[in-house]
Amino acid sequence: MRQKRLGDMLISQDLLTEEQLSEALLKQRESKERLGTVLIKEGYISETQLIEALKNQLGIDYIDLNNYNIDPEMARYIPKAFAKSAAVVPVKIVKDSLFLAMEDPLNFMAIEQAGNTSKKKIIPMIASAASVSHAINILYENVGVAEAMAQMREESGFTEDVVNAPVIEKEDEGPTIRLVNSVFMRAYTESCSDIHIEPTATDTIIRMRIDGRLHKVLTIPKDLKDSVISRIKVMAHLDIVERRIPQDGRINMKLSDRDVDMRVNTLPTIYGEKICIRILGKDDRMLNREGIGMVFESDNRKVDRLLANTSGVIMIVGPTGSGKTSTMFTLIKELLSESVNLITLEDPVEYNIPGATQVQINEKVGLTFASGLRAILRQDPDIICVGEIRDGETAQIAMRAAITGHLVITTIHTEDAVTAIDRLKDMGVEPYLISAGLRGIISQRLLRRVCDKCKEPYDPDPKMVEMSGIKNYPGRVFYHGRGCDTCFNSGYRGRIGAFEILLMNDKLRHCITSGGDKQEFRELATTSSQYVPMMENADKLVEQGITTVDEICRTIMVTV
Image 1 (tube, one colour):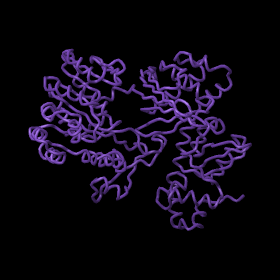
Image 2 (cartoon, one colour):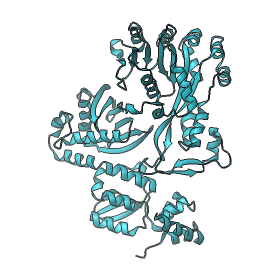
Image 3 (spheres, helix red, strand yellow):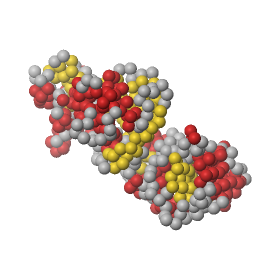
Image 4 (tube, helix red, strand yellow):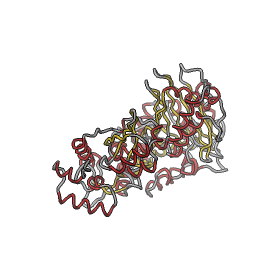
């Protein structure tokens, strides 16, 4: 069969000119990249156009790898090194044929080598470059898992022995232990915040929340689901027989020589128990201002003023998952010393802080935030930290504690600093208490960082720029991540906080007690209190190439 050249194929379909092809070939010789990659980078064609052209010309099927579960056992047919170098990933076996997803289905040398390695007839399929790279990462990260699952199937009567085995790391540990431990280790390595184990009608999917987004990392066959779930329930000290009601538990284990706490919740579904695992064992070495993303000098000066107070309430606000707890504990670490009695009320206790008295909320026995706060006030505290204000009673007690000489640091779920005032009023807190007790409000969001490995300049969508309110002036350079193995081809890796800090003053206190509305309060804050809206700080992060316009629109604009 005569090998068709990609350039000639695209020219014949009027997608490329001879001149563009010549320029692309020159750049290809310099960069050593695939021709298709160069053509897309230079903007001569889009990836969609390339895929459609190959489909039509070659009669090869397209596969959306983002919506396809690859059996981990496929990894044994194609070595990882070859898969990465050739940008191919084995998808499925049908009789004697191996279906191979390829970024470049014209790479006949790769097809031939794959056939020799797998001893199968190769049927190429077209897939996008990003999806192939992502699928390779997922498949070969799960090689150990595949081996464990194969052994689980081979062994008879493994369930009881394995499930009740201790949490150890030995060469002779059972396959279920190895499978579960490998999932936990990968979650820890990827800085995952949550693990979701979700049963379906046909199998069980494992997803991990990384940088605020869920990624599918593994599919477990239906017949192995019960063993995996039972193993996790035993580790969390839950009743493995009870499957009708939700259960809560905790796991503590050592991963990479660090103690990691995990909060486990089970939920009955129509296909079995769903498990959600929150990883609490975060690196407390990152609990500093730089680690949480407080990088601007103006913000740091305001925080210094807040921490100089010996009484009053410092409130940290934002939606769920915005980093409020990390910020609160960063402030705690700065305030903690042998000369102060610092007590925290938490649900759950997420960070162990030596020198602080930490109290775990237990509503089943009547230890709520409100009752716990009353008890703390009889413990001669200097600083009180309330994990979250959830009701008017807790808010009232916190404000009264503040005006009686205690420094209170707490969090509350609101959209921004100004809205927090209305939220307290809605809870029934008297305006005079808010005015007298409140010292300042820190509002925040977590924005995904542009991946350093694939960072490059780009031209954002003008509509997104306009919608975000980001300043766009001649010569301004915007950055994004094109996607790589490091960032799961998302273009982002890690997160950084975007803050707005409101300091109270006499004018703002008078506005609260006189019944001023939110708009009046916001205007007054801007003119009299060094208040800088979060969007202005977010604009600075874009200017420095730390995040993108798209991320600001997704994270901040939807809630403001």
